[in-house]
Amino acid sequence: MTDRTVRILRPDEHRAAWDLFRAALHVPTGSDEDWARVETSHQAERGWGVFEPDLIGTARSFDAEIVVPGGALLPVAAVTGVGVRAGRTRRGVLTALQHAQLNDQAERGVPLALLHASEGAIYGRYGYGVATLAHRVVVDRHRARLRPDVPAGGEVEVLGIDEAAPKWPELYAATGMGRLAAMTRPELYWPGFESWMRRQSQLVQTAVHRGPDGVDGYLTYHVEDAKERGKLEVQVLHYSNPAAFAGLWRFLLSVDLVDEIVLPMRPLDEPSALLFADPRMAKTERTDDESWLRLVDVQAALAGRAYGSADPVVIEVEDRTLPANDGRYRISPDGAERTGAEPALRMSVDTLAMLYFGTWHASALAATGRIELLDPAAAAAADELFETRESVWCGTFF
Image (cartoon, rainbow, N blue to C red; front, side):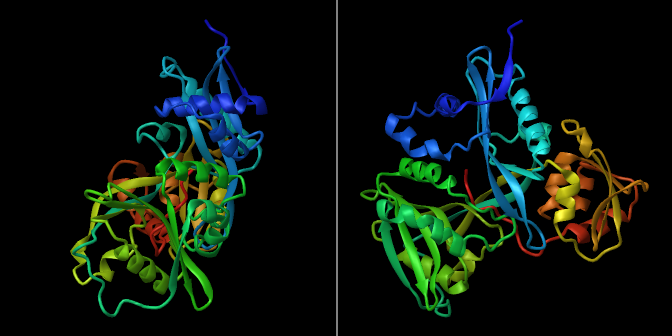
């Protein structure tokens, strides 16, 4: 049997891991110029590799914070760069990576991990659950008309990528943290984001909206097939008030040589259709999973968020990867704590991740077999305890 080693990558191994990840996604090997741009986005001591003896699998993360119900910011490991070399898949390489990464996060006291999944059937077995959802929205630019009472005001300035990229951090800080599940973006996030944006198109534009108090919204976009049937795709859209939201839509509808406006990943409760005289002009083509959450430290994660008003509920959690999380937790309007009391609900840690942000109701999870209902009244109480009024949405791709 071939010897296998799982360990933290050395700095001089990060590029090989980056190339392996790109190959796993069927993306060509990056150039020296590409690597020079993204090298600083690889945080030290956060990249993992599986060697046999050559590198055959990799995963990495970076440190950030995430808004949880109640408004607190909790540390989160943003997991990315997960890939296994072709010919070495389905041999336990990914499992080895996940176990090493999760145990390292637990040892460092990180309560949460988050990722965007390339496939939906992979990460549940490692304790991740679908935490946020997003709509793909498509608008017919030629037929869409804003209602006359849509908020007006503000000015929009359009910047090319070279001018805009240095300003993205301050634009996001001013407009991007207003939702549950929103993430902070550390300095090392931005080089990788810029590289991704430059791969979208040769002409990526940033439209910045300014209201009476300064910058209050921005978006990035590119246009495809402008000479035939132009499609404008919005990669980023953040705003801090209704006037900025309306102003940016007013701008999008003004862009020439465009037939269709596409927003691939938007919050479920974003009221785009209500801006138009005919709300059918904004079509929701589909709903996708946006981000997957992992409770690395169940006690810290549960204690870090706020809860609604309902009778206390005791839940029992099973975590096969991190058994220190196994146990019973009493959830009440006053918070969460470990307990020895009899449970009313029993679930795996991936199901708890689905419940954590309120995206899914305990009653729905019980009805589909994900929660074992030991007390018939407990599901309704858990619905109220974990419920969040707004649709949660991460809004940060990594």
